Image 1: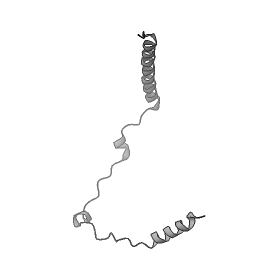
Image 2: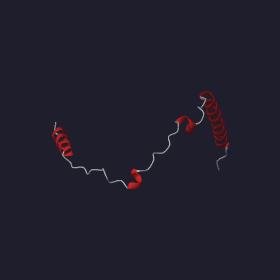
Image 3: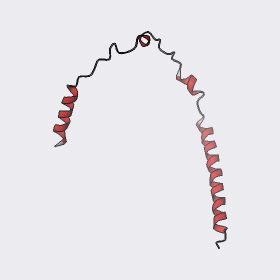
Image 4: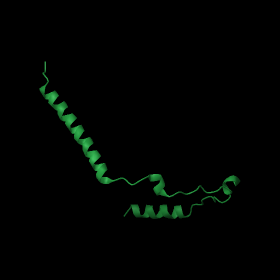
Length: 82
């Protein structure tokens, strides 16, 4: 219950705050500037990715990494300790 009065007081103080007006603060060249041309998002993203092919590539990569780690672990287990 104790945080509730503090929260209400904070909200009241925030509501009474005097924020400066932003109208008229931008430079004249910004007021007359044109908006950038909008292009469709699909053109920027390129062709859609085929999830089946991507999954196959990831699986091949993981399999190769697993085999390399297994080989390394066998070499470490078979190494002679002096």
